[in-house]
Amino acid sequence: MQNKKNQSSVGLMIQRCHKWRQKRKQYMDQARQTADEIERERLMQTAEHYGRIVAAEQGKIDSSRGPSEKAAAAPATDESADDADEENGFPDFISNLK
Image (tube, rainbow, N blue to C red):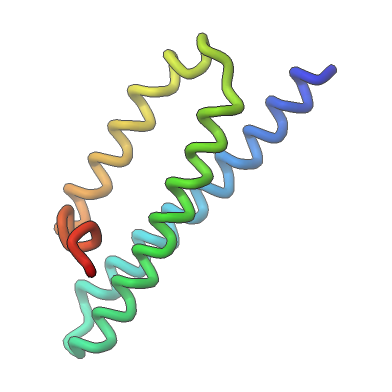
């Protein structure tokens, strides 16, 4: 019973992560299309915020999964994160903000 409840909880966390990744991509797309430098910076900071939320939630998901589930899910998760950064055209921008 506990395992089924844990799977449901992890499923909900994955859904939230997906939603937040979409929001992050939306803000990055808006930033790319905005001519105003201040508005672009605000949008990028908002996208960075969603990126931090996703990273924290992904950590919770990874810690909730068993060892066999982690091995099966790890490559897919890593590839999707790499593709998102390459697709956005801002791979270093967010990490270099200070």
